[in-house]
Length: 421
Ligand SMILES: *Cc1c(COP(=O)(O)O)cnc(C)c1O
Image (cartoon, rainbow, N blue to C red; front, side):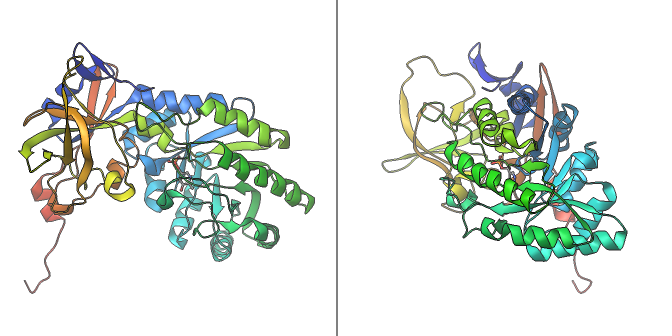
């Protein structure tokens, strides 16, 4: 459920007409709903209410400061994967003890920054990284709380580019090697082992792959405890999928996910941590765009939008589907026709949808891409020197620009010329 609904013949974001935002801010523009963000965070929080837990929002999904602050004030922790994200989380007021540091390539500088600023835990992804974290912590005279990310070798049955839990993926330590790695971790002076971490991929649409991975984590917990390690926290990653189409997809609900976690892991008495990104932000954001031209081609008609692949790369990168709806609600039973919906970038890859059935649309009409809140704005670029597009946050009947569109001058002035030119 989200808060982008038709009312009185037009699309609203909560209590604000989307067309009003487009008129005030220009298009293309990302629009987020506060109520939807909070609703999704709370669904997870309640799904884990059977025991001690922390929902750490995977902020790589959408990392605007206003989004982070909204979630942080509701009690969310943050899962960060870079020094930049760590800085963003801290700037949004998230205390270090609610920040988890994931990612396969943490640099010494990033590790030092997190240890200085405070960190809940590092999720270790390799043995060399483990040694470096210990070294950096020891040199600072502190001890770093850590989990080891294990790779359970299960098939997440999702798109290959976002599957992370198979042995061929670059993530984590093979679960079969885990006991040896934990033994080394326990012996390193700068580390305190507190738990286990696992994350098998993104946009999972069934619970079974999670359950298979978590069963392996349960076995490992017992084995590590028998080896004398104190395992008190299980970080179970993110990855629960969202419905990208209104019609046929029905991924499991957070409440079902939480119940499955209790079944598989509840008996271990561990604090549970999860790192959802997409499910919190995905359906909390839309991308609003204007039709520039209706181009009638041979045997196909193109809707050329002012949004392009640089603004929303998911269709080009993951063959992702986004529902695209007119901002003015079509009449019931309005005739539909097939359109190829494309952006202005000079690449055939700049295609959002092919043969998509849409009601009659023409130049000047607004459309909204649904489910664009996660991995949308954060993956945008200035390819074709198209300015990063603005982001707007809605709350009830209010809206605010939370990232403004830069001017061309600002973009150009980020470059500098060498003295010989
Ligand atoms: C990307 C990622 C997540 C979030 O995944 P979603 O599918 O957005 O929930 C969580 N944890 C880690 C380690 C990740 O890399």
